Image (cartoon, rainbow, N blue to C red; front, top):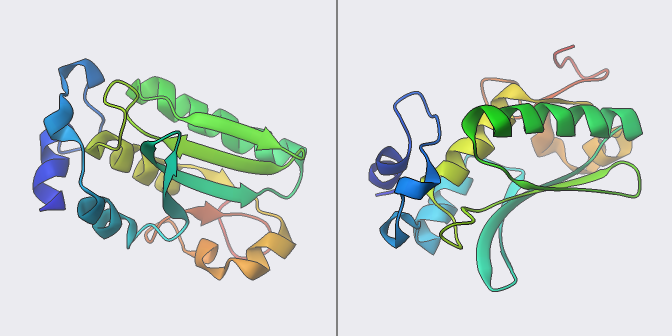
Length: 154
């Protein structure tokens, strides 16, 4: 079922379609969101401000690595015209929050954007954080890439 919904909001190449053309029928159900997130190990379904959202949180190796990841995510957001809320706290703790603002919930555009972030963004994680989050060690084919002594991409 999630596949059908995803096709309705995203092009075959996984690109986001303009949110103005979406209506409430494009919102994903809780079951669809959970099904999509089973392959996206670092993303979590959340409910902020009574709106369903998905979020990604990680600790970068240092401030510059956190900023590099935010800039890379920003470039994807501009290319796709789908902009996440991005938070940097404690100089290296990053949180990315996705939802379709015009709908007040999660659409296939958000899932597509999360997958693009996972595939396209190299994050140099804090070694301590990475030890407690082994799911972040996936390679590019399996999701989020990483750098820094663990065989990731440089």
